[in-house]
Image 1 (cartoon, rainbow, N blue to C red):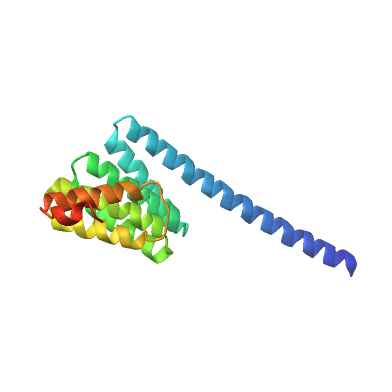
Image 2 (cartoon, rainbow, N blue to C red):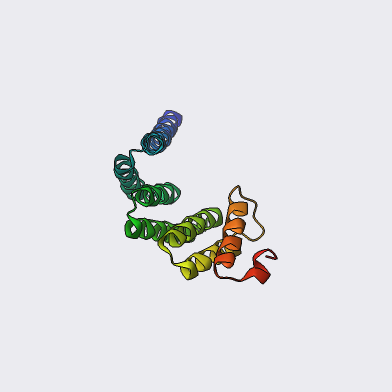
Length: 171
């Protein structure tokens, strides 16, 4: 009887180890794909980077890796932004922001709000840029992030564009 328990225990351990290795190799594969996309992006190969990020997004989504899917979609948006494909960039950023909301990832939501705000400014939609900046700052209240200061500066610049000089430097 003891040997049957030992064999069953070893089988369970082997199965758990195999699943752990599978998860690690899947995560490694996603990281490798993101790094490949980042290299293409840095080299100015935005079309290839966007395709790589889109593949990574599909892979992350099929594996149920929500944080990775959000990062890939954010990167898709950035590549499309650089290609002046603003509608596609907005769509990617909005979808990523929605997924980040489902994941409860406030920092990602804040980063995506900054990206959206920048893109809306580029498109000349100052009100949408202001709305996105406010949403990002609201989400980031009480958090410390590397980009929060950029979002604060952006919000002040938007207020200056709106001719709201009285509050541009106060907030």
